[in-house]
Structure formats: structure tokens, C-alpha cells
Image (cartoon, rainbow, N blue to C red; front, side, top):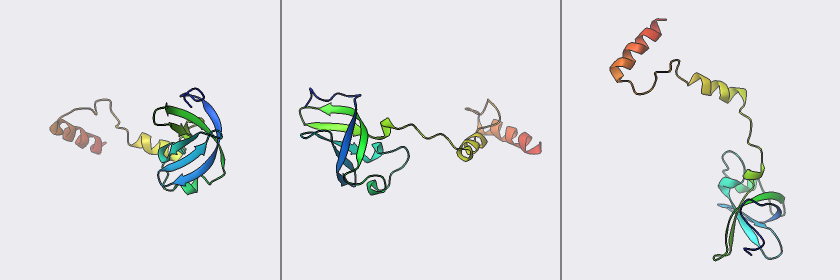
Length: 121
């Protein structure tokens, strides 16, 4: 097994089983790997069944191979483009940014005086 697969490879596989913690993917006739629930897609996955079904053809990236334990860790997420930030979440991130560059480790007294000045503007 260790000769066939190595970390970083991108392969085609077929979903053969689904568990609450992830999905098993057949890489060939003899070898299966696990796609952990956190590696299924970008973002939060509550239920694997919402994203995959048994028999689905998927593209996976080999994360690690443990020849001694005969385990292959896979990721579907690593083969996908990360989602672009939409305008709404970008606007929220910008609004939570402080207006000044000195928003670091000031004392509460210093910050209070600064906040009072800002509120008066």
C-alpha cells in the first residue's frame, strides 16, 4: 500500500461508506481511505449525508499514509477552491475592525478616554 499512495497525490475515488465522523472512499480494489468530516468541504458540516452519498465519485487528496496501521487519510476539501468572501461577511469584518491603529494593549483608562472622544464626534 505504501508504494501506491503518498501524501499530496490527487486521486479519484468512490464513496463506499458513511459514518457520523466522515466517509470511506475506495481508491482502488484493495485500498480505502477516510475523509474526516472536517475535510469534506469548506465550512461547517453537520451531517455527512448532506454532502455525500454512497456511490458518489469524488476527487480526493492524500493527506497521510500510515502503512503500519494500513490507514490513508484523505481530503475532498483540499481539492476544492476556497469560497470567496461574500460582500456581507466582508462588510461585517471591516466594521468590526477598530478605527485606529493603536487599538492594541492600552489600559482601560486610556481606552475610555479615547472612546469618549470618539462618541463625541
